Length: 222
Image (tube, rainbow, N blue to C red; front, side):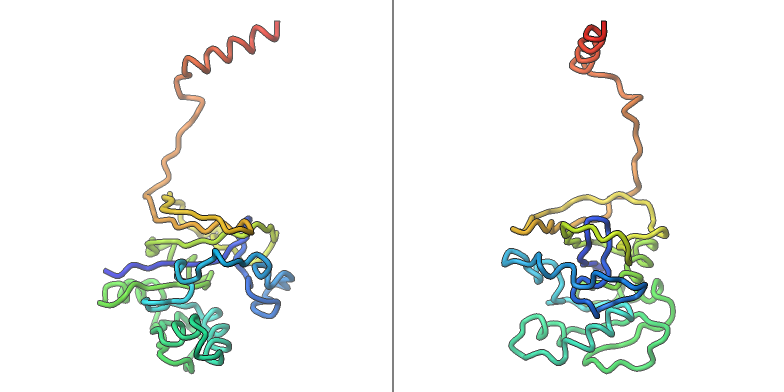
């Protein structure tokens, strides 16, 4: 069974829309396109985060595919990211596209969830989602994503397309590893960790240290 890995850039408040430039995705009159640009430094390895698609098959939503298709095929061959993305096999989830011009691209037929289930069952390299917010939300709700690479940038955007929306399935995640860039970008890898396990501090038996603290506070009020 192939793993499905989602990699995305997100603001501190969970917005993932148009990190690369003003014209990338202005949907909803989004005014902050290119918000990630000034935070990049040499410690941020796009290959380690899966953003170059190296040794993986890509799974892309329509919007991300159109952005990539209009840019990466026209970059120089000595650009390592262009080289890996152009060579990778690309599976595109769309109900509106009928033809794909980018090399090695195929349409996923029917609804995304059963198409991805079938794709994961096929032999081959792991599957890599880049961007594709709506597709991530659909597949997260169906519990099909096996790993999340989330690079959180120290910026608050307030509005825009979110990584997880109201349709997100409540679930726990486990942090596998994390690293911070010199500009404060936190690069984290999470894997699903079952259901949320609620608890309550109110029902917990207070420790001896906590009892002593409460006693001290009570004496100070007298």
